[in-house]
Length: 118
Picture 1: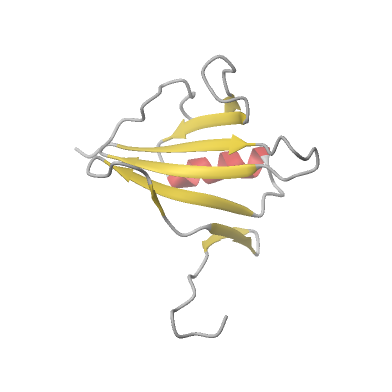
Picture 2: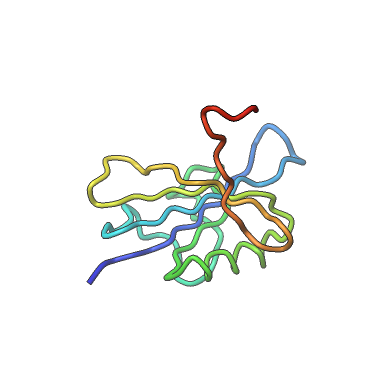
């Protein structure tokens, strides 16, 4: 059976009080996250003794839909979410398409093609 966990991490920019939070989702595929501090199924305040002080909220989820619902509830105005995949075969997390809010839904950002005008 495959193992899959979606870890959400929400950080803040310490240089600006009005900056929007930075939100990331990492899909751990057949790999257990290195730390087990986040709560499962909900976003919670990050433990200051364990995490970098920039990290404010974190949580592990069984599905992407649950992770997105938690983000929508906590940060309804968030414009984008950076996404990563971290498999047992990878040394580091691999960046995936950014999710952008469009019409009340999260949609993957389409990358520019090499020959298309910018």
